[in-house]
Image 1 (spheres, rainbow, N blue to C red):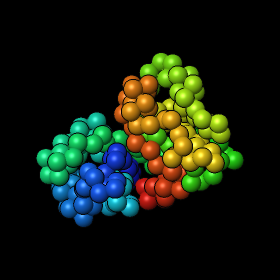
Image 2 (image 1 turned 30 degrees about the vertical axis):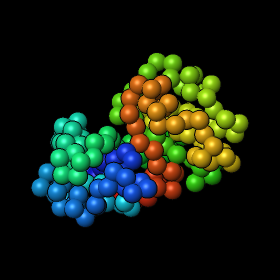
Image 3 (image 1 turned 120 degrees about the horizontal axis):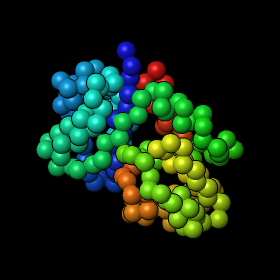
Length: 175
């Protein structure tokens, strides 16, 4: 059985976009089979759906209807997660400061070059397929100019980020 993870953007953050994980698991089980979640930030581990695009759209619609939260849903298979981690170029980065932004689709042409202009000292970025790897350096997420609005506008596609520690755990959970 192939397992995948559905990644939700910006749920259960600072009391906003509340999506109770236990209720979500129960809601999704009829469509996705055996479902589990990892931490409350929107990581849904499930059997790989036969139609990933339709599954993401269905999950997004269910969350909007049930919880009043409209959130992008991005699917990654176990193999895609593992390959992205293996290909990311920042082996010397801190696990806490290195994030993968999983994109819904391909980034706009020239997006990485445009984002380079917004980097603060110590930050690095690299596009690996449809995953943007961001090393926030010592300043961390709090000092970046790569805000959600900037990333969405420049990339031309929505995405959701996880730190390297979480990505590694998701690889284990989808194995």
